[in-house]
Length: 339
Picture 1 (tube, one colour):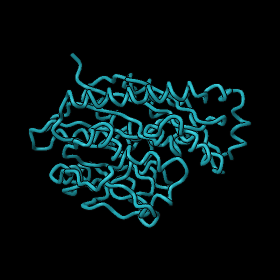
Picture 2 (cartoon, rainbow, N blue to C red):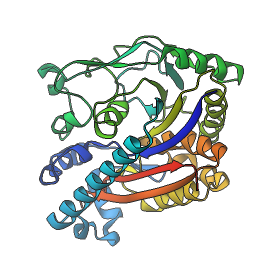
Picture 3 (cartoon, rainbow, N blue to C red):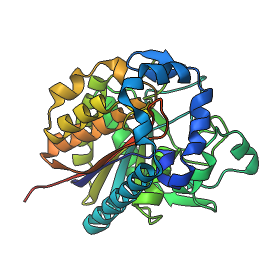
């Protein structure tokens, strides 16, 4: 039977692959956005500035803070990559989300499993780059290589997971090839591409991408459902008739596009304590917009709980970029057997 040997949780936001001196590019997008989601309500940028004025975010967006936090994130990514290389798993399961890259409103599954034999990734065309909001194109190399490439898929495990999850009551969508989606990417979504490029360093092992619809109502799986999904995944992976060792990744989060350190720290403590009750007690209205990507860590947490692995938090870095408290809170952690 297959053996899970490693869990990795990582943020994947564009700021991680953008020089710190250019973080301000994304602020232009923040200022134009009229519906920043924060704690159950939406705000225009100026409204958010006024609401969060007591937090004095002007102190968090100095050049020194940007430089220090960017460096801390790069060190944490390298630490995850070293751990991955140290363990040397044979194959991987990568849990991430899609942001209208593969799917659009005519068909947006709550859960999807890719079981194709290859996974395409490549650079955007100049026309696709023009479609991007400010501050995203500069981060392209963080998740997409400069030339087209096909990574190895894992049809045997992918098909097994689909069958097993159906038996466990999860009606997952089946993908044997990548959908075209919105047409502004060239291959796999950035949640997965980041893992391939920044953690695996383009030495991509055979893997199964598992996609959750964390972002888009009305069929977002609730946190409790994501946890049960992870428990079923753990069972399915363990029952795969193979002697392969398996790494499981959760890619996304933490809070963004408005940083909420309160919810981040609650999530991280619950993960460290294997405390599913606290994790699942967080209101659904806190897991919306970019912060919804915390849910990509929830199936991972369930799998690691099943394995009795303990989390090692490498770092938590709230990367503020504006006086409104916009930005991306980054977290990096791994789980492995104790002793």
